[in-house]
Length: 396
Image (cartoon, rainbow, N blue to C red; front, side, top):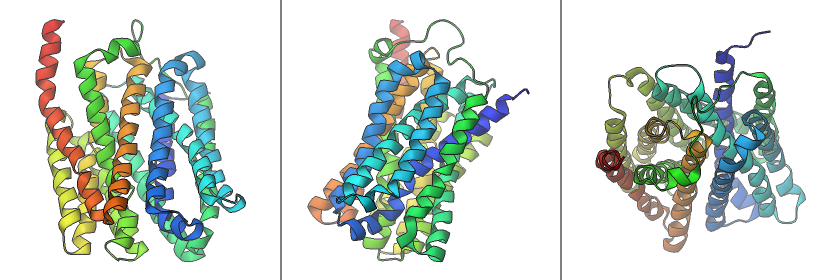
């Protein structure tokens, strides 16, 4: 039976829903973890940082082993690791003497799976036949947002019906998504990542100033997104003093929906609007969203500002991916692995910065304010990109 590339695209979309699951289910439960297992704000911050740090390590290692082991095998195992991690999340904290160690162990499996999915799914989409690559990349990453929003909505409904104290059973249900999608990747058709010649290695990419700039932009993109995304639910409950349902639905869910909307919207306008200008505008909008979240005296406006941050960060990650892939067409697995590595460093450092500053100052608003530096740096980098690219072309 012939299976078309549309089946591959659908499997990739579900892969990004899996990525959203392993990154965003646990943050809905931070307040529960704190009460049930006696963990501090700093430990919650470390849990976030640890997840993305492990993903970053996997990203770096993947640049060396994916081409040798095979894309299909690695993608299948990535989904199985994610499934195991979600199952262990609902088991280990309750059976180990130290619940926090159980959460870290489960996070390890989730992060290994999520890291591999991140490295592999984007180049799989990039390699499939089609003309408008940036639109395809943006559409792919929008499914991360729809997955994020779906997790919030379904989880909120579940918590209201069955009680949040029974959250571990929902973790088992979420594990079915990566488990079943692993079988889809066993049979879907794949294309080579580099159509002609040999892919560029890490050393060849690492010495180019333009690529270094892309890495910095990925760090800023990941940090700008996750610094506020990972803390919104906790921020709403503990700093804005609103209910968990209101915080998750108006803050976190709105963040995810608007992030997905911006990515889907870019698919429609990608051939009319410069991607560089779009990223620059979104960096400024994100900065404004951070400042409004922190300084607004009204909780509702702060939550809506979190949503604006979601809209503004939507194009950053896939946009930088697309610009880098266009600039380095022979990058292959190494290109996407190093970009994902940089992005995960940002995803780790952004929330960790918020947690550490908040713990030191005793004020979560100050921690979130410090993270506003990331969209500012992204704006500076995208402004420098043209001049750096011209210098690189001149030397070539």
